[in-house]
Image (cartoon, rainbow, N blue to C red; front, top):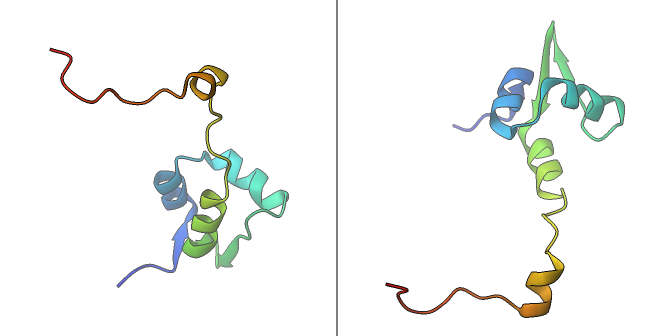
Length: 76
């Protein structure tokens, strides 16, 4: 059985995003916190969607210009 929500500490652990950053995401409307009593819950699907839509690392100009590829064969 998979969880459909995680607590804030669990979301921090799963994603690597800091607690303060989560509160900023809530305030910016990028994630919607759910409350159950005093507990803050985050939908796993919403967190996954947010993370999947983050931009990837930039490709360096050198790698683009030289079209670097892994060598085929042993270097030793």
